[in-house]
Length: 563
Image (cartoon, rainbow, N blue to C red; front, side):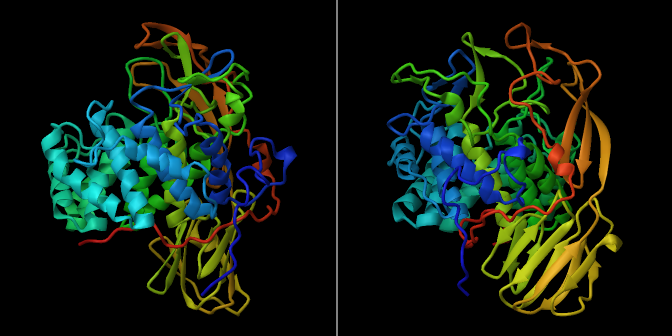
């Protein structure tokens, strides 16, 4: 059935600045809003050759700088993949999508399918590049990309000793599924069983770099599902639960890594891989994790997106081959944090050759991808059943779902065709306090495994679900085990953090093991880009309906099935 599609027409037009409610009325939560904002940095931040800048330095004026081998295959691949996903989410083609793809492929060896020899962080970078290739192949069905994916699976085992690096598991599994290619599956299995975290069946603890290790876990979960290895999947779930016990993880403050000093930051790349793992688990037997995904997305992922870059001073110096100073702050709007704190866009002022890195722009592509992964699974239609897994807006060919959280506990489902309907009960609500009505008469409700099972419904029916959205507070502490602890009072309204209040001692400096000295840190009220300025969300108002674009069903690596 063909239905009208509302397309985001402009990257910035009609998008609310979420930290300044007085400038725009509140809107419903639509993934398209945030991804639409990201077009600004996708299109305006790269240099004249379409090459993204890896570094944004907090200098006077702010500087966007290349980082040699890192921002070539890595960033071009991430931006290419993000542009493809953004197009499927918004209906708008990024003006740099084609050049990102060409630049990414320039750094791939056509003879081996691998990133070119000498690439920085070879194994990890290849995992990024090959994942982008699998996304591009799922989008275009270009046989040349399929050939590159197969060559990479053939050549990875003999090109590099990877006994200690397992990040390629997920891209190999994408290749195994898309190409039905046994060597990709075989090598993914070798990496899973040889990995120090999941290769030991007795290990249930998470550790290491959030981005890298969550990427390993997401790939290993894919492999476990494909092989019907329930014991491995249960082990991965146990490791996931251990990661969720880390301070701040409940609202998405996922520390980049554990350090032996006072500095702790949240990298958007790590948030993306967390969302990928949690979504894979929730889609495949662990639906209790949908609440985790919803909280992480509503809170730290949203807050990690730049809506105001005015703290980065503008400049008008002419660009050079390696750097740009032109209005870097405004060009970063729509990008994502590399090291946020619970209260600021940048957690600490740690220098790189005498300059503070404000952003690392691998996080731009990762932020878009995180929104895409959550969007795909927010509501799904499969085998005649509509499942509303998270209380976000979503447009499908079969239905339009709208939610008013955090302003009101209200969700509606407008059906375009007859189907069974199920709606997950939010974690903060008791099912007995949820009310369901329909314009077609009485709705009989059964509660099973955390869902309201509403049974067969009719085309043209509008179902309305209402529930309370309580306000509560909790106190948390975040920091490394051997360093300062930073304390906060977190105010929740339903699944949304509406206020983040530093309490106790507000350290203005912290020790950096890398620099061997104290550096400025921003865990209190003072610092660049204050986060969680959300007082307007405490209001009981009816938000305006945000613009949506229909999910066309393409590119889905997270609703997985066994072979």
